[in-house]
View (cartoon, helix red, strand yellow):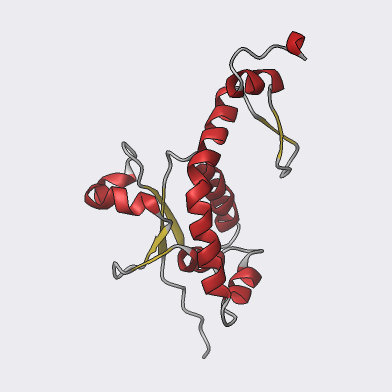
Length: 164
């Protein structure tokens, strides 16, 4: 008799205080909920988060990079962690397989390290957009509407439409 074993549950440790992370994890959770075999558990480890208390001693290092934790406590981080998560998500498994081709994981890790350098600036922009009321339109569309005037005033103090 051939029975398929359920995959071990992977714990996704994410920064719920990061607007980029929250958005990506919300998308991943939605996909994981569509599949009974995803076996992903999402834990917000940011300051003050309920699930983050178990990781308080390591919080700073864990928030610096994306991590996946196996049931035995071992962890993957960076690109390898993303690939492990993608492998469990419907519609993303092909990317996980592609990422395992020779040299691909190294290239993804390099791209992730570059992203980590620009992440603070992207977080600032995302927080600003949240503060001025970015709205999502449509179902599944990632289009945004924001107040151009408010953004311009924030980026260039003293800006007014009259100055154009």
